[in-house]
Image (cartoon, rainbow, N blue to C red; front, side):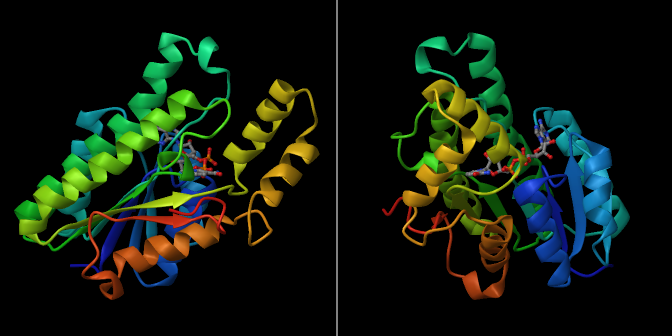
Length: 254
Ligand SMILES: NC(=O)c1ccc[n+]([C@@H]2O[C@H](COP(=O)([O-])OP(=O)(O)OC[C@H]3O[C@@H](n4cnc5c(N)ncnc54)[C@H](O)[C@@H]3O)[C@@H](O)[C@H]2O)c1
């Protein structure tokens, strides 16, 4: 048996990489997964006890197979972080059905499938596990430009988090979400360029608007989010379930 084990999806970049690193720092054996296994490998390389595995969260059989492998290899699964997500900025009237479907496949179905695989294993192992979903500030308010499909997919994550928390509570499994704001990651760099083009301005202007929208007056770091995920995974959060914690410097208060 190894020490507590955490699986992180979308761990090859940005927030997922920071979550994997923070959990590693706090003593977890980390399984860093990503649709891009080379990127997950880079994350795992800098964590004391970690491994990297390929996982496309849109494939439920792959989620089951990954969990089975982790349980076979280590005999445990304590924490599952559904973090993988995608975005593509465009006007609501321009979102094609294929884009809408892909956004939901990754951002919503991916959270559903990964959560199912993890929960089945935690129940079978009798583990009081923790499942944490990376939602978004855009999961709590739709007043977000050019991200209608993303907003819809992330609102769904909050409802799913509550439904999972309710059903899994009798097994001692806690389920929560984090809702980041404007986090400096590769996803944000893409969004800066898209929003600048859609507004007919430049990326620096958009970035200034985002910071001006944030009372704590800076862009968020992936580590800001990772620390809250680590808290939700810890015993300090032992009576928190079904919650969706904003980590956004005050950019949206609810
Ligand atoms: N950056 C922000 O401002 C921000 C704000 C709120 C919420 N979020 C959410 O945080 C999460 C991480 O975002 P990020 O900014 O780090 O993005 P990112 O693009 O930097 O990283 C996302 C990672 O997910 C992986 N991924 C994409 N599709 C996948 C799939 N089908 N299966 C497995 N992995 C897949 C990518 O390869 C990448 O490594 C996402 O869920 C995103 O929606 C980000």
